Structures are given as C-alpha cells and as structure tokens.
Length: 173
Ligand SMILES: CC(C)(COP(=O)(O)OP(=O)(O)OC[C@H]1O[C@@H](n2cnc3c(N)ncnc32)[C@H](O)[C@@H]1OP(=O)(O)O)[C@@H](O)C(=O)NCCC(=O)NCCS
Image 1 (tube, helix red, strand yellow):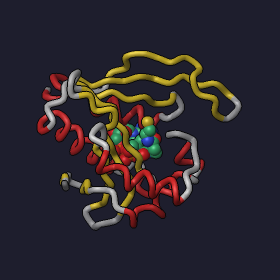
Image 2 (image 1 turned 180 degrees about the vertical axis):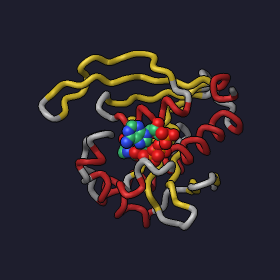
Image 3 (image 1 turned 120 degrees about the vertical axis):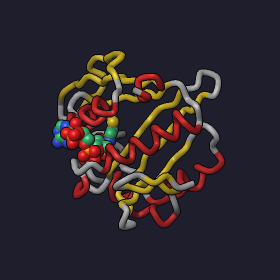
Image 4 (image 1 turned 45 degrees about the horizontal axis):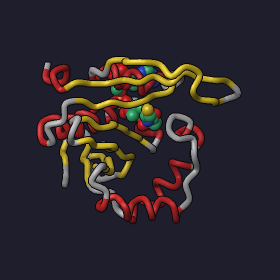
C-alpha cells in the first residue's frame, strides 16, 4: 500500500532499505531519541521480513516525492477491540529534519489510521529532551496524558518520558 502526502510518500519497507536502517540505528544523534540501540544488518533484515506476518503492525518507509528513503513511520500494538495503536516516526536522515517531512508523513499515516482503519485513538511516548518531536506531536494535536518520571537514563542523567495521545474527534477538528 502507498500513502501519498504533499512532501512524502509512504510505501512498504523493503529488504534493500536495510543499510539505511542500520546506519540510522548506529547514529547516536538519531538513536538517542528512539531506542538508543544499535541494530546490525541481520537484526534489521529479520525485522523487515517479519513485518507482513504481523497483524498488530503497519509499517511504512518514508520517501521524499523525489524517491529518497529518509525514514519510517508505523502503527504498532494495533488493538482492534479498543481501536487504538501506538504511533511512531523516524526521519533517520538528519539532513531532512525540521523541513516538514515528519509532519507530512505523520498526517498521511494518522489519516489512514482514523479514516481507513477507523481507529479511535493513537498514543505514543517521547523523551523530555526531544523538543523537535514534542513540537511535532503538539502540532498534530497530541495531548500529554502522563509522565513516566526519570524513566530514561541518557547523558548521565535521568529524564522524564511523556505519554501523549490523540483521539479521532480531536483529529477531525
Ligand atoms: C521528530 C521528527 C519525526 C520530527 O520530524 P521533522 O520533519 O524533523 O519535523 P517537521 O519539520 O515536520 O516539524 C513539525 C513541527 O515540529 C516542531 N519542530 C520542528 N523542528 C523543531 C525544532 N528544531 N525544535 C522544536 N520544535 C521543532 C515544530 O512545531 C514544527 O512545526 P512548524 O514547522 O510549523 O514550526 C524527526 O525530527 C525525527 O525523526 N527525529 C529523530 C527521531 C525521533 O525523534 N523520532 C521520534 C521519537 S519519539
């Protein structure tokens, strides 16, 4: 499935994307905002091969309209009973940060989640030092629902982790 935005195209993740994901997961200026884990080629390939089999996930590669692969965005933990899912996004290529790509790709996936999948709610977690992501999520309409206090140890300091959520009726507005 392909989802077209104004600046981005969301398409299925392919095995040939592996090297980009390995590079981004090993970049400490990128992974400090996500899992802070380095993933090797074998682990990433296993992850990509498993995606089509997993009904609790929808994962997309983010490409620019010019066809450059710059990141990924996903719905995880899709729960058909409660009609909710975990939303996640990564622009791994730092040259494309703060240029509207994250917002555009997020809008495409959120529209799909609410309009096509008929979900009721999306939720996520974000570290307090990730000002760019917090700005994006607020712009998209996510509201802070709670704080996991001093949950993350990064740069010799404990950091808060915020839980945020977006309801379908807030997105329609
Ligand atoms: C977080 C991320 C997805 C944001 O995407 P982006 O393309 O860089 O952001 P956008 O240019 O679309 O900006 C959207 C909004 O985010 C906020 N924002 C963007 N850059 C910002 C910055 N440097 N500081 C604070 N807020 C910022 C603004 O509110 C912006 O809206 P505006 O342009 O109208 O002011 C992207 O930077 C990224 O993937 N970073 C690394 C991985 C990561 O942090 N993932 C999220 C983990 S929770």
